[in-house]
Image (cartoon, rainbow, N blue to C red):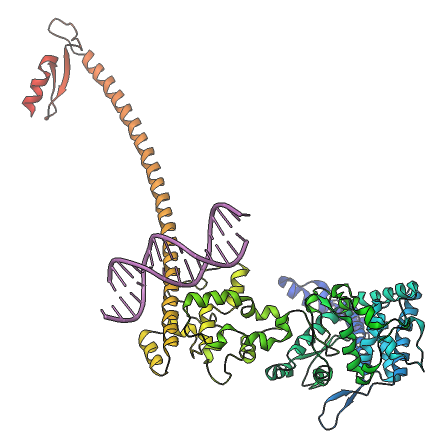
Length: 589
DNA sequence: GAGACATGTCATGAT
DNA sequence: TTATCATGACATGTC
């Protein structure tokens, strides 16, 4: 701890005055007095220091746990790889398994909540003692699994010379044991830090799907290694350059890919595990402790979703059930079982030059689910480059220029008459955009070395120059022409619809304006009518007023029925008998 | 399942 | 003559 010397009282008072002056200078900036408060800052400083110490302590703990986990790895001096040390004798493994499970169970029996650190400590201590491998750790999980058929595999670990505890031998024999173990298993799974195990293992399994693909091996080198226990991500090239191979590569040859649609064959599953751990044990007859043939027990297909093991790894979807740690990949879809095959089984592989567009579209629709959703089939991020790398129908050394390998939407220039996102749609459109368009698929199928964007958007001259540089067969030429025509027409249709919509909007706007003008004119007309009516009224009043003041020679008033007042152009007003009224008008004309 | 809507495509006429 | 554009009509997919 850093010692802080407290100033003397006098100096303290001077400091306080100085602080006050400074605070008053900054008060306009909204600075609070507490900013200059020495004691408060000291408290904050101590608090911060305490947090720092706690953080360091946690990091130290994590490092120790990591060290304990890596203790079972051995550095291969020749290859520089981290290789798991040779598996211990079955006795050791059994003891280790028992030790861990006993520790976990004893904790569970005591009603204690197992924290992640406690679990890690138990595991780390055990690993330090006997150096068990990661596969043993996997078997510990198996042991903890309440599924009896899976647990039967423990009998393989326990040789006749070294009997294993009852809890491991036959969990089904005792319902109490089963319940306890299930409880311990659930406690282990309930730890939030371990729940990420499933996802990370899934990622490794996705990697394992490509274990036979050279292209994917390259990808796997850049893959992040997930430490499922510590949740530490390390670049593979940093910590263990071929770490994934420790769990995938060496075992891949031993482990047949287990294919199943909706069910899971436990027998083959256990066989795979036995092969992984020690190929010799595959000769051991599969019998459980009750003497019942193991094959009989596991003969019936087991719903994979019912296995707690699935839940442990990632029980959300049975189709994604995989075990990457053991190198076993249980693929429930034919596509994921052999991605290269599924990718390569494109209808375009045969380069069907004779097909018309409609026929090609028919085939498009039939194979759409295979081709269009590579990213949906595999949980790992699937890039277009990866697609090219995997797809045997596209030669890797030729074909696409740089533009073709980039998503066309990115650098597509926005035309003046075309909005940047002319057809903004919901997520379905984004999925549509993410997939290859049909024309792109066709172009790739026929090995057209241009992107569809280029074919469509190049000016005529540039397009002709480009075409003259390559030799195309008739099918390719027809396809390129069609692509260009369709692309142009597509843009034209978009623009046309956009114009149509703009026209509709404009006409609606005009209609609104005209309606407004009409209303306005009607209102004006009403006002003018009112004014006219008023003027007429006033004129009538004035007329009668003038007429009433006119008298003949005898002083009698003129009858308005017999006479009327009329005004000539020069402004003179005459009293005219009504019979002569028309004649006067004629004279005026 | 029907209907609305968005989008792609084709046919056709105009430029 | 050919390419391109504009637009109506139709088909298809999605909500």
